[in-house]
Image (cartoon, rainbow, N blue to C red; front, side, top):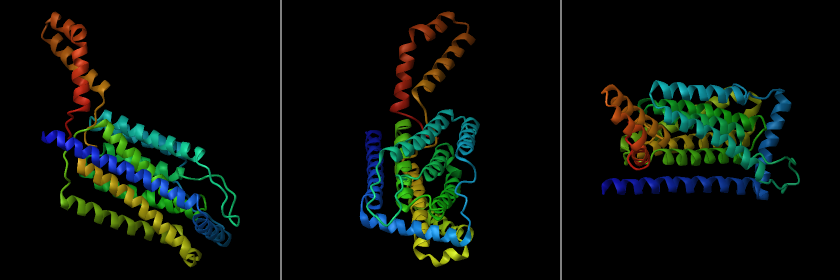
Length: 329
């Protein structure tokens, strides 16, 4: 009875986060893209960035590497961590999350229109959501799926700061607007919650107050580091005169850090991310273990029973173990 109630609470938590994420993404798109005031405000930020480039003659590097090498390195890192921790299923879920983030970002950018409501601004194609931020945020959230709980805060902190610098760089380079970054973060968090909920539906509820406080204070520290890093390493001295651009960079840094904090708190409250299984792998593991036991004991009849007569029952047990009673590490 308690386990059933826990699952219901987990489902409500996941549903609430998904609804909130979709609402944030929709609100960011509507305010920044579909209103005249929003387009004017964001176009002023783009104009400040363009004026800054005219003064300095330089643009910040948005990503440390091209997108394709970053994806390849991220996939290799996920596989290595998954194999080292014997969590191959978790690595597969993380890779699927990374792929879903890139696909969802490209799809939304292609489908969502951007009407030109501000006639004084630039007539550009839709840039919502930011593909650069989607890529960086997806990598961080995918790493959280396979990272041990003891290292999760460290990975989340480093990833939040790195993604915040990417988000600020997209604004300073005049490639994206603040609404693009907020939408990208919201989309990634929604996909993260859906992926971890579908892959693993059992965990311990009720994060400790000390853990929640540590996560929130860690997020505040990451925000401070991100803003200071933006001012010192991304905005040149001439950029300090642009108050709107600086405030916009601080705002997108806050959005990124808030997204990572929400993901960590979700893992803490539900116990997910430690061990993730999928039905096919559970079936293969069960069949292999029982078959090896039967062969080692010399009972050929038992071996034939495992391979032939018990196939359906093995599948049933594996499905039940995967979707209704998973153990978390």
